[in-house]
Length: 498
Image (cartoon, rainbow, N blue to C red; front, side, top):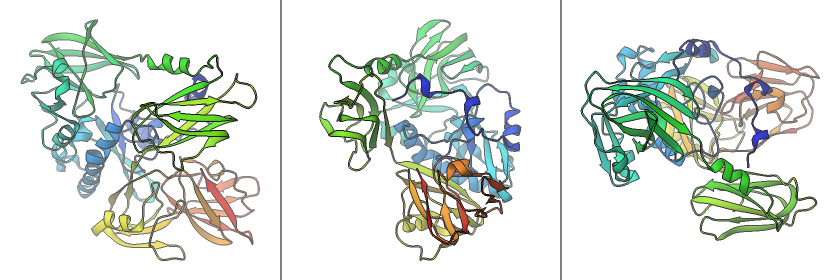
């Protein structure tokens, strides 16, 4: 449950994300709205890219199912092809057939790619094939269901064609073959309001490189207009010939509904609601001991726990899609300040850019050695695990050394890992970091280091504990990366990531 106090301005972040030279170069582009794809990170399990850019990737447990399906079906495969061909071309985009290799990334306005270099450095590469903020299409095909729609994306020219579910035919109408006179320019950008100058001699179906979601509304020259969905996730509308101002706005009523439903009722039952999908794993935590009951969209009670402050993931799995309601009652103490937070996990795709040679890596999703081997296939030379054979499940916090024959993108699908416990023995211990990038002390989450303990990264970075703080060239830990902890203590200790 979120309220206004949970949102803070960027300036209040404890450890601001450091701006890299790559960030500086991309930010020279003053265009109002474009996106960045970071191939030098665990693309869909990090949020650092979003600190300075509108990112194709990023992680949040609550994400649109359609976008996740697009990631799995088209974006991840395109990323692997993109990484391979651009690396082989030495970054020369004139030698890359971008229209056929990564069309979905083009329609998502991925104007810049961040590629890894040796030594932990990165470089930005501009995508000359990107479609931009909005464009008219020559053809619009209608299909009967979602499977047909997502399948079609791999078989049509997305620059000139679009596909839509037949239920949007009334809103979108028919496309018109275009000429070079059609121009669409974004003139103002805010997260919940976008303004476009549209000039077309023929009019027709206009596609926006923006994610379709209920609650967005549109006007043409100040008059209400209807939005539809095309290409599985994008907004679109039909615009008449001539010059027009198009405005897309988002002011959902659900914000007020959520705040109202969370207030105490007369019979001392607090109601909270969340939108979940089949297969999501759910967990709840209250700041007081209470009884919690969860009701599915159908009204069926999913669970009831009494005199508890939390409900773990174990066994709490959504079996319906839609709005779930959590009833909180029998509160210990005052009813005035009851606060409940919830978390739900959904399968995700973790994509990591591997360099040719050795990579110190850890998984951020639940998987196993066999899946890792089959995914890497011809790229894999060998896998090393400290003091054991590389077999079975990959435990949370386990660091693997992976040797590959060439640079490649490793894409794994599974439930996100949310916690890990690593035993640090005297001497050297391999470990992998999960979570979000954070300064070492914060990332170690209360772990008590000993004087002269050392953490080493693959690129030669290091940090040494001087008794009060960590010093050295390594200042933060990154998710998906492996490290070596050198302990000076004569006993074993435990690091807990959560």
